[in-house]
Length: 113
Length: 114
Image (tube, rainbow over all chains, first blue to last red; front, side):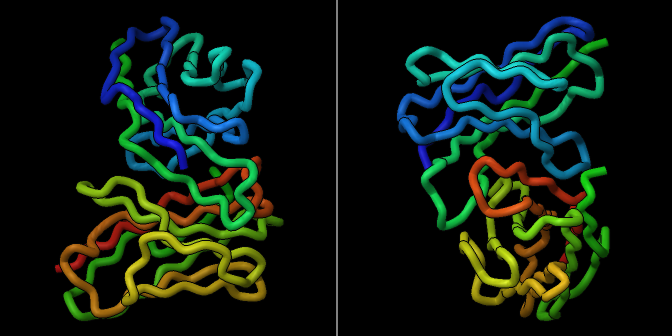
C-alpha cells in the first residue's frame, strides 16, 4: 500500500473547525482514501472515504486535492468527544486479495474546552 | 455500538499458556479481520477470513492461528505466550472483502501475559 504522512498531534478548541491533513504523494489512480479514528479505550471506527471528489457525511468532510497527493479531513465543529487518533489510510480498489487496513501512526487530536 | 462483539474483554495469563479470543461479527457480515495493537508496533493486521476461508495474512506469528466457523464467528488462538504478546487484540468485520466495504471494529480484548 502507498504510504501516508500525518502530523503526530494537533490541538483544537471546542466548537471550532478542525482540518487534519494527510499527505500521500505516491497514491495510485486506484487508491481510495479512507479515514478511521480511535477514541480512547475503543476500537477504531470508520469516519469517511473518497476517491477523487470531495465527500461529506454526518461525521465529517473529506477534501481531496486535485492531484490527489494530499487530503484533509474536516470536522466542522470539534467537540470533546472528537478527541481521538485519526488515521488516514490508502486502499487499492483493485486489491481483491484482501481488504486489510494498514494503520500508520495517525494524528492525535486534542480538543480543549 | 459497532455490532461486533469480542470476548473476553480482559485476559490475564502466564507465559507459555494458550488462550482463545472470540469474535462475533455484525449480523450479515461475511468477512472477519484480526488486528493487534501494542505500544511499540501500533495497530497491525494479523489475518482475514471471508465466509469461512482464509483470505489474507499479515504479520501473524506461527504460534497464532485463527478460524472462522460456519456461523461466521471467529476465534484467534494464541499459544506458547510470551511477554511481548501482551497487547490489545481487535476484531473487525465487513459485509464482504471489497475495498469499499467499511470495517466495523469490536471493543477489543486486552491480553496481559505475566
